[in-house]
Each structure stands twice: as structure tokens, then as C-alpha cells.
Image (cartoon, rainbow, N blue to C red; front, side, top):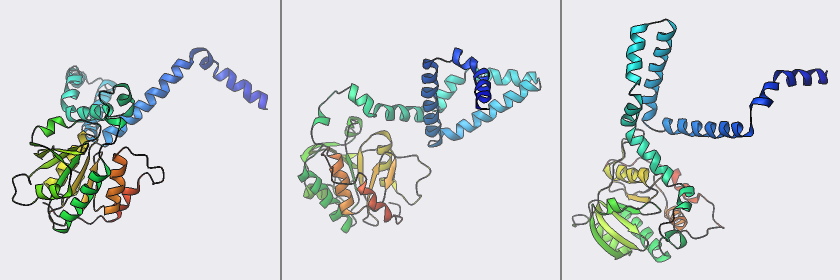
Length: 293
């Protein structure tokens, strides 16, 4: 019986042995992975809604071809003759964000090392403690703050929108910058290594429609910069005093002091073998709604 089954499958799929090479299998695997991630990317963006509209048009084209509806087929084919240009125009924000994310992958970074920032610390332990202390001191007094810590993606274009400082990081300076009714309190500060490079910087506001309506402009700006860079943004709510983190297009609200310290230690590029990889996520449990600012 087993011999009969073996002979059957050998005869049924004999064409596969002669026509499918190893390179074909590799191509199929690569294309499958690419298509899978493209679909995931579409579903996470507004492009998914537009894509569903394009799928509906393709279905209409199929039925128009099946039932020989010549006028409708001619109109739809004319529209699709410029389809590539239309897709680029419609999906321009999403395509730009996807290319930015691709450029931030470690594979590309390893090939193009334009500077030596990956070789050392992003900032010292003293700077880390100053940031943590300042955030929770401002939170205790409901002083709003927006602190962007540059990682691998340069933030020069946003730095230019603010006032240059180039000052050493201290908790007293951070608190003074965001003190209400002072010239530098409005906007964000950008930190690079152990320096506050600029204050009152303008950041891109997130257009994500899925985030809570209670989040104000400060939180949306922190989320927006995290969508276009790999920076870490700390937001202190002026309404509630709660501290939040924005990274990778996601916002983590109500983080604790220890959680914030643990995550900033990872940004330092210091080896943290004894710590859990995502210890900072403990702060996710305190997820009360902040009111709009």
C-alpha cells in the first residue's frame, strides 16, 4: 500500500522535480515574507482604507470583464493607466514613513556607520538621574514637559526650529526650562548625548486616529516624533502630572520612576544582562486617562 501511495505521489508531482529549482523556492519564500509584512504595514496605516477601495475597483473590473461590459472596462482601464502615479500620490505619507522605518533597521545601520555614536554611551548616569528626577519633580507640581532624547536617527531638522542651548543636562535646568511663563517653556527640548542642544522645538503632531481623544497637543507631538524617528520622548502631563513615554509610534502612559529609569538605561547602550528586556512596560498597568492639554 505504501508503495502504491509513493508511486502515486511521485507520478503526480514529477513535474515539480523537473521545473522547480532551489532559486525558485528561495524567491517564493522571500516574496511571501515581503507580501506578509506589506500587508501588516498597510493594516497599521490609513493606507489600509485606501487599499480596500482599490480592491473593490479591481473586483468591479473583473466582473466587467467577465460580463463583457466594454464601456465600464474601458473607463476603469484608463484610470489604471496612471495607477502607479496615483498610488504614489495617495500613499505618499505612508510610503515616506515606511522608508524611514526601513532606514532605521540595524541592517542598514551596520552598513552605513557615518558616526561613532553606537560605540559609546548616549548619555551618562548623571544625565539619566537628572532627567528622571526632573520629570517627577515637574510631575509633582503639574508642570508640563516634552523631552526628546535623540537615538540613532538625527533630529537636526527639528533642532533648527528651536533655540540653540548646548547646555549640560541638570535637573535644575530642565525644571527651569519648563517653568510656566518662562520664554523657553513652550515646545520640546532635544537631548543629544549629555547636552540639551535646543529648546522650544516644534515637533510633528501625530495624525493617528486610534489614540485617545483625551490626549492633548503635547502627547500628540511626542507620539508624532516617535513615528518618524527612533527617538525616546518623555511627556509630563500639565493636567495630571503623569509621566508618559512615546517610542516607535506607541505611547506608554503612567510609567513609574523605576520603569523610566530602567528604559533610559537601555537607551544608554550599556549592557543590561541582569535586567529583563522590557521591564519598563510595568508602567503600562497605570493607564488612567490624561485630560487634554
